[in-house]
Image (cartoon, rainbow, N blue to C red):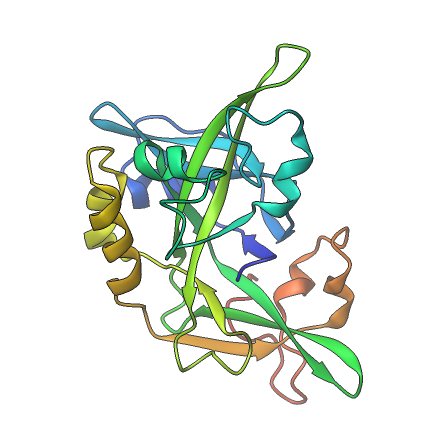
Length: 231
């Protein structure tokens, strides 16, 4: 699964990476949690734009926004048929940029967080989908979810699920709203994952309100800043 992640690359970098026609200011974030506002990429006609939305999908028919705290991840195997996800899965695909995400293990009875990142330190791109919900006050709320699949063997010791990561040669196919649900599911399950690494980080980032570059710094003795920690 993916319950927290970090994104510290600036919007101009993301604009070039995803070849965006439209973008939005992107603050550096090191501990993005469900319910937070975060960026995602979607297709608008023949172009791509970077939009901001709530992490936790709110389908257009939701009665209130509480559902989003249970829909921040969607299983790739079943998203096409689940009521909360099937409409977005069919027609509103998204790419979710990240620099790393976090998983936890138990060590000496405590939760130990680990940062998971690409070995080449390039950004990750999660497969996602988005929807638009109209709040009772009339406000339109965009939201998104991150799709998951069984974990790659290199990180399965941290969690049995992982976000689906799409490399750049699959972005156009994923964002194609005409892709059938069957082909979309196949893409999720078969997409090759980039080489991944992980390292232990400070447990103070367990607090979702803690927001600092320290969230991504290695705590391995003698190794200093590690992984993808920004300078």
